[in-house]
Image 1 (cartoon, rainbow, N blue to C red):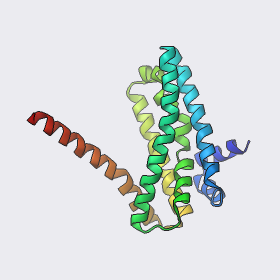
Image 2 (tube, helix red, strand yellow):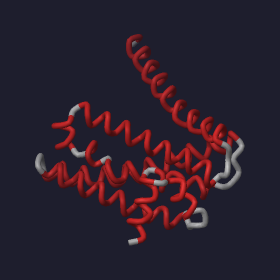
Image 3 (tube, one colour):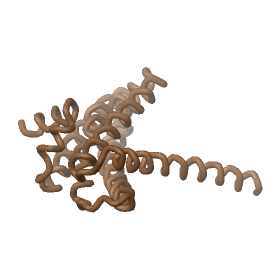
Image 4 (tube, one colour):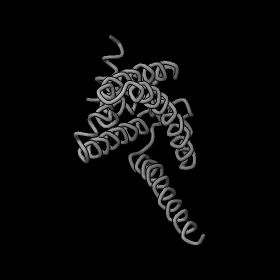
Length: 184
């Protein structure tokens, strides 16, 4: 029952959700992520069953491990950027920001991740995924302000840098790859 209340808080009122999790151990945030990621992975696998059993099993493990792995990468990246900007409340607080802040992705990304829905939704799935990413980013913004006790402007700077830099690196890397490929 506690996990349902936490989930509701992070979906509807992340400000109070983060307020209630200030002193929570990171193991609780990790368990929360593992449970909600499991739900998304199971639903995604069930949707993929309509296509292929092997695809469903592979999709389950890829989704589950992918969510956990990407959360860890995002946590370390967000903390690195936060530290550069001058935040000193600790890596554990950033852990909770990321692992609780991604609640919208945990609960609804199965619509975008399930091959069956992607087949029928097409571009709508990508739009939904974009909305979920923005929703989670806003949760991270709220968590930065609440758990790291920083100003709105500092939280905006952290979010902009942490979101824009990877995009620039990806675009630069892609352009570099194609320019090197055309030379050879």
